[in-house]
Every structure is written in structure tokens, then in C-alpha cells.
Length: 250
Image (cartoon, rainbow, N blue to C red; front, side, top):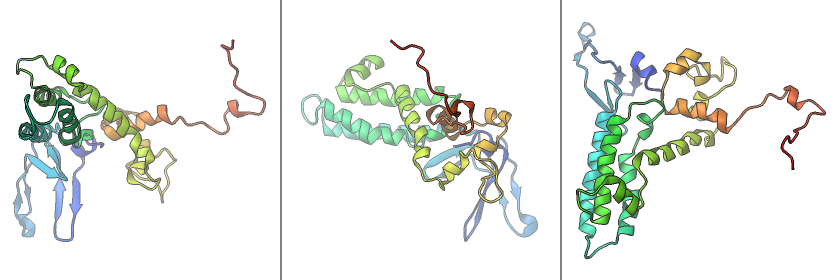
């Protein structure tokens, strides 16, 4: 999502049949006075929750990661009822429960805050704490055990490497969508057209705007040039008589 540039500078307006909502991300947004038209005075809120995503004024998503990390830790505490060192489910089953039931909770909406050059120190600190508690529960180890050791014995990769893995997978997903999908239209490289072109597509941004715009969708756009290279049909390499030469043949 391209939230770092566009949402800080341009307000979003959501219209419904009954009311409209204006969203403006700013550090100190002033109140909106609608008394001249007979409306109330709208006071800005610190947080906005939409579809399970928790937005703050700085778009740091600290509250978002806090909420889902606490939810995951609570799930780990509840799963302690399923077994201990002497009875109940074994460590392999505990590990499977962690990967299938807890990781999807804590990493919900990770594309919002995990992208290239994003400040991740706070997020990694919270996620490492969550995974440490889960690894201690899986092994039944002491609380003073080193995190790297219990993760290695448990067979759980560090959370930063897991994020890198799922982020690379999700960057390919937009290219599997239909051509008329909104994400495909945002990543379109075709020349601008008055009928079919999206005015907000990444391909229409200048080099400076692409440098300033950060987000998961921008990373997918940059990654696409390495995964799906494009060739010009009139390039000199495709002229009749030209062919690939193996310079390192046996």
C-alpha cells in the first residue's frame, strides 16, 4: 500500500449511503468546524480502525502491532491448557499450532508496515518477545533460556526471516490477479490513456515521486522488473540472423 506519501498529503473521503468520512493523516490535524452549514465540530482521533487495520497519525502502526501481538500472546497462554511436559500434546503438535494459529494472527496486515526502508525496530522487538514466549511454551524450557537456542531446537525460524519469506511471496501475488484488477491497474506500465489509464498508477510517477513513495505495492512494482523482464520487439537483438552465443562452451 502506498501510504507513506499519498495518505500524509491527501485526505481520503469514504462515501456511504448514510454518511461520509474524511480521513486526513497529519501530526496535528485541526478540528473541522461544520457549524456554518448546521453540522457539528469534528474532533480528530488518534487512531482509526478499518477492516482490522489500526492506523495512527504517524502511520507507524505501533498500535496495530501491539494489538495483534497481545492477541497472539493471549492465544499462547490459552494453549497451555492443551499440554505440558508430562501430558497433553507433544512439542511437534505445539509447533504446528503456533505456525497455523498464532503466526497468521500476529502478522495480519504486515504489508502495511513491512516494506523497503521502513523503521522496524519497534515491530521486531514486539514480535521477538511474542515468538520467545511461544518457543518456551513449545519446549517447556526455562524463562531464562536464550531465544536463539530455543528457536533453533524448536525448529522455528527467526521472525525477521519469516517476514522476508512471506513478503517476497506476497510481492508476486499481484501478477497472478486478473488484468482488470485494481492492483494490476496501479502497477501498469502502459502509456497513459484517457479511457483506461489509472491516474494514480505507479508508472505515471516521476523518479523523485517513486523515491519518496514507500510501501509494499511499490516494492512489488520494483520487484517485477527482475522477475518479469520486458523486451522490446524491435530491439536489435531480435533482428534476423542474430542468435545467442555461448562464450563459455566446453
